Image (cartoon, rainbow, N blue to C red):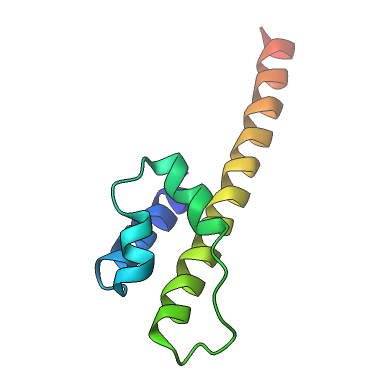
Length: 87
């Protein structure tokens, strides 16, 4: 859970200094919407371009967030099953 929180905090931190194009698109979104939008960003292949770099990093972090969220859900299912056995 801590890593997931760090990922969204890093995304928000990156958006503070991002160029207007991605920042304007993503400003004011709820966390779930922000993750969804960032995961769908399509950066240009030239990461020397500030706009491409500003899309690439949040995209990777959002996908990491989604992976961690799925992993947390898997653990919740496993823990629930274990608690039922023990209860």
